[in-house]
Length: 174
Image (cartoon, rainbow, N blue to C red; front, side):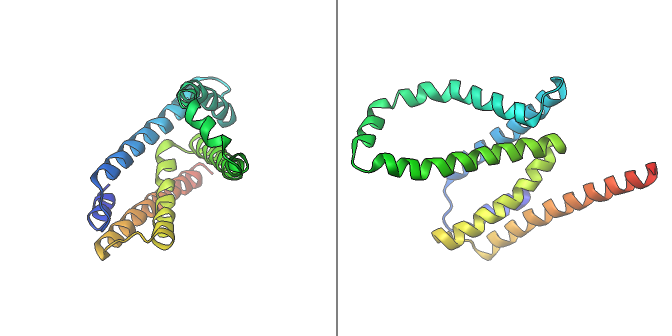
């Protein structure tokens, strides 16, 4: 958390609303992971694949009515020449990558814990920052890079500590 605050303070493109939305998204993702693990712990026989199916089903219940409310705009968009092909070109990879992301997230949460999944997600943050820096010209000060490095180091230290604890426990039980 401290690393995130330091990184934000070194963000030359700082946007309070953007950070507030990102914080809300992070809170929702954390709750999502905890609830997913809770469901797997309390529903006998539920696998991460089952959880993926139910999540997709419930998301359809929420997002289908929202999508239908935009039907007029969608119809106008799709009526333009070449838009259907362009939509398919971008939508198919997006859906596949999104499905893979959910699958691997639920798999990691089932195999470990929501906390471990969240810590592993900090590596995604590093990659996103580097891509944003290279591809989109995002700007960080040295303070921002120090915060990002601190966040990364914290994740690595946590991962190493969990690994050593498991190795120690396995050695004692052998």
